[in-house]
Length: 185
Image (cartoon, rainbow, N blue to C red; front, side):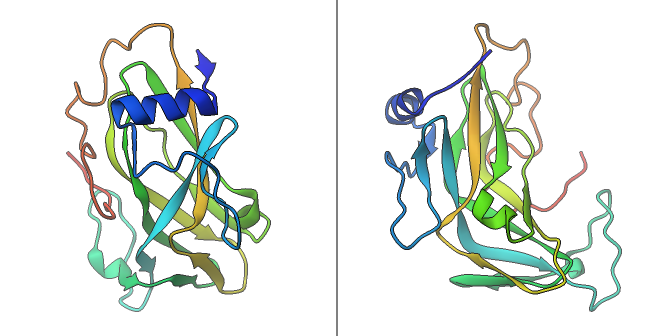
């Protein structure tokens, strides 16, 4: 298994629609960077958020998730409360090849501010918008900038295809759009 370069990412996105919309260069200017990097792709966070709240005294239960655990927000900047959490989604839609696995890590600009981004691996043949988990580990409110870079995806290509892909397993998050809350099959 090998990590893939910017050239491979660009080719796969052009020829196989792996990332859409695809930004072939790294965009910086006055934004937190996004687009192709040397060995990965910096994805953007969309302007839709689910911010966790305890207003309704809900319990977070992955087997019985209560929509009252969060409030919906749409905007250019999301404020994540101190020691709290928000869900968001990527701007980009991904179609992962059968012989590829990805790992997603947070960008250092946010990490240095106490913002941790957690994303599970994109399994072979998974496709959809990425649900992004954003944790504010600080005692202060934190700003998240919509339509700018939030985390980086690293692509690992195997020299052989997996026996059973996410698509083969009929994975419950296959083809997700928008922010997808926890599900149990």
